[in-house]
Amino acid sequence: MASGILIENGNVIDGTGAPMRTESVLVDGENITATGSDADKQADGRNDIRKIDATGMTVMPGMIDAHCHITFDEPTSNDELFNHRSREGLAAIIAAANARKLLLAGVTGIFDADSIFLTGIDLRDAIEAGVVEGPRMATGGNALVTSVGGTAGHMIPDEGRAGYAMAVRGKDEIIAEVRREIKAGADWIKVHVTGLVPRQRHLGELRVWSDEELDTVCKAAHDLGIRVVGHCRGGESTAAAAKAGFDMILHATLIDDYALEEVVKANVPLVPTFTFQANLADWGDKVGSDPGLKDVFRREIEDSAKTLRAAYDAGVPLLCGSESGFALTPYGEWHYREMEIFINDFGLTPLQAIQCGTQAGALALGLEGKVGEIGADKLADILVVDGDPVKDIRVLGDHKNLKHVFKGGREVDLMNRPAERQPISGWRVSSFADRILTREVAREGGSA
Image 1 (tube, rainbow, N blue to C red):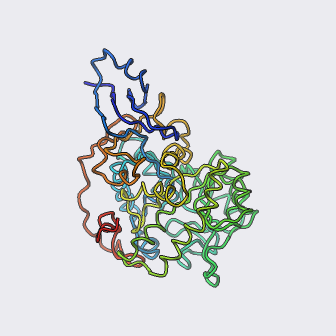
Image 2 (cartoon, rainbow, N blue to C red):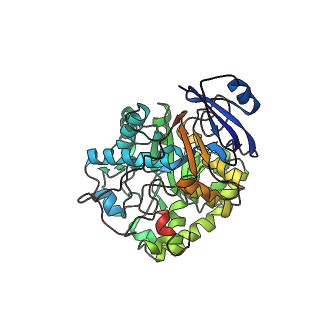
Image 3 (cartoon, helix red, strand yellow):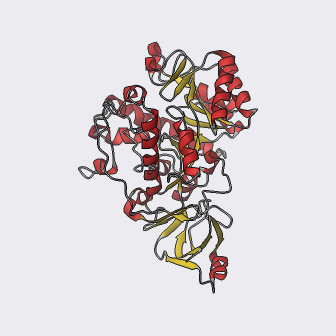
C-alpha cells in the first residue's frame, strides 16, 4: 500500500506569486516533504510511492475562501435567513453536507465569518475530528451588532440574538458576549461596524459603533488571544476599525484617502468580497434580483478598485472571499471568481490573484506558512487541474477540470457527488432571487 504520493511533470504554481515551473511534488502523510529534484531523489527507489502523471496540468495549492457563510444555506432574502432557519439541528446537518461541496470545488480552507446559532464552531470541530468531510475552517460565532442593527433592519432585535447576529448594549454586554463566544470556541470575533440606518438608507451603510465600543471589543478579544474582524463599508468605519486594532476587515469598500492611510499604517488584511456584487450585476436578472441593484453593485466595485489596489501596492494583504452561502453565491460554484475580479478590475496579474486566493488566505485560518503554498514542510492541500489558470482563471470554476484534490495529503473522492436535494418544508422563501445562481444558470444564453 502506498504511503507517499509523487505528482510528476506538473506545471507548479506554488502560491507565492513565483512563476510557474515544471517539477515534481512529493507528499508523505499530511505534508509536502519535497519539491523539484529533491522530490524525485527522495522518491527514487521507494516501492511505497503512488505516482500521478500531471503532464500538461497545473499543480497548485487548494483555494482558500476567506469570507464564507457555511451555515446560511443559500437564502434568497434576509427574511428567509432570519425567520426560516430556526431549527438548529437541521441547520447543522445541512451545513455539513454543504461543506463537502466546497472540497469538491477545490476549496481546502474557509473563514466562516459568522453563523446561525453557533453551528459553525460545531462544524469546524466535526471536520477536524474526521466526523464529516470539509475544508479547513476558522470561524466566528455570532456577529456583534449594536441596537441600530446590521444590514437586516428591524429583523435584528434591540438586544439578544436573531439569525447570525447578537445585539449588544454598552461595555459590559460587549465584554460578556466576546467572552461567551470565545468560551464556545470561536476563532474570531466579528463586528458589524456598519449598518443600514432606516431614515438614512440613501446614504448606504453608516458606522454604528463608537470608538470606545470598538476598542472594548478588541481589548476583550485580544486579552484572550482571539482576533477581531469587521464588516466595514465606507471610509469612516474602515479607518476606525484599523485604528482600534482590528485584525482583518471585510469589504473596506468606498474608502477615502484617510481610511487608506490608516489601513496601510495598521497593515490590516482586507477581504473585499466582490463576488456577490459581481454575480448580481452580471446575472441578477436571471434569478429575479432587483434591477435597481445592478448598477449600484457594479459601481461599488468600480469605485473601490483603485483604492484597494493602492492598499495592495502598499503591502496590505488582499484575501479572496466569495460570500458563499447566499442564493447569488451558492456553495461550490463561485469560489474562483474573486480572483477573476482581482485580475479584471484591480489589474493584478493572474499569479498575484492566485496568491491572494491561496497563500494570503492562510492569514484568515491562522495557518500562515503552513497552508496556501506548495513547498517542503507545508500541509498537502493540493489541486491538480486540467488547464492553466494563469491563462484563464475560470478553469478553476469548472469541476471537470479538477482531476485531484488533496487536503492534508488525503485525496477527496471527486466521483462521490452529492445527491440532488429535495425541498424542506418552510426552509425557503424568495426575494432577491427566485432561484439559485449556479454557473449552469449563468451560462443560459451563452453569457458566462
